[in-house]
Length: 322
Image (cartoon, rainbow, N blue to C red; front, top):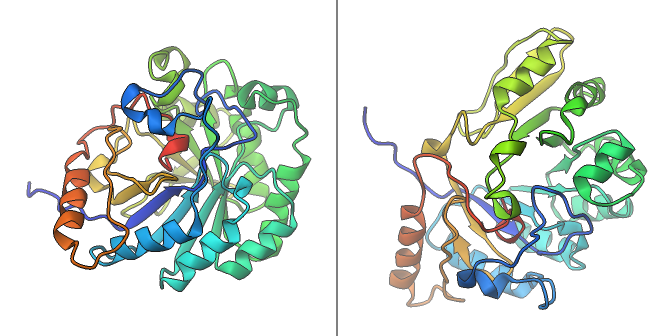
């Protein structure tokens, strides 16, 4: 079988390490590794990517790569006060696909502002429709109303919407089918993510892990489904129930898709990462002028960190735009 040629085509950016929630699978409960002390939140303040830095780093990457999509993540990206400016910066660069993943707890007016700035789609993380279950997962006792209203409003604005649910044993397995029913009734695709061996759960992963096969078996208790069309570079395998509800499973561990990964990641300092399973970061210059050799070296090194199978990392995804 011929080797697969990998290219960086999708840029995922953690625009801030800040987040108002403390989800079990993301928020670090210990300090980052010594090699990544530059990312440490405590006692250092949260990191926010300046639009001017994004403009420079994006121009450098575009001088050597064909980036077809930028996906803004965090942390919680809507906590970045200059988020519309970041989106406009990307749109002005000529990139047509600009996506964002959010926990949904933001002022509704921001949706219109982001769409006008150039946002083309939005993913909402929603791990439970139960108040108690959401509190367990998020570490916060908050009403779900803002999240659910923003999902509806995004659809009203014509923004393509997806929902994400990370399934954690003992936390939210009971929410798999209620979330499918909620999303399906609104014609929203929902993706169920296997818990990734990242950050604070790197050493305690197995006891909390629920496989994609288990998730599908849970859905089969209430719904019949069949395979659905799935894009070749999709991280999810998609299915459709007899009712027309569309869902996917993102199974980094049990059904890995590393061989086709086209993602490069950037943190709020402008450093780049080639793989979620490798916390090594690389610096790129602020300008491409006379720097192509240095840029190519960083990109080549980042590409070489890509794995053939997902193994995870001790670094939390909030720092690297997971």
